[in-house]
Length: 163
Image (tube, helix red, strand yellow):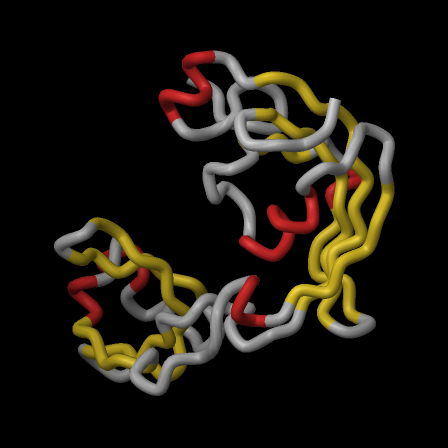
């Protein structure tokens, strides 16, 4: 079976930024995703099309097919009270920390840039925005997705999302 829309793929990967390893799934369960439903970065999903189980490959993904480019307006000043768990975070915020900001669309993750007494400057860009990524991939298995998985838009079970 080849990877195509509506298949569930499990795979191990090593994610590199230049020579620096950022992630390596080989120490745990393989990742599972539903192909064609934008559950992984676009460039990696495109590189998976037509591949088969046990296949190994390396793909270099530019920012526009990964996490996009850095935005000029990504750094914003936010009152600390708008952070999720703001009472627990008071006095513990430090540059580089990841925090969740409460927004009308739900929680949004951001990285702390600077901390003031009642406000915090945060960068809302994805940490890998603007970065060319290299994925080393080993496809473990491919199967047809269930009707529930198609309806929910993601893989279920080990390595996917449990219900």
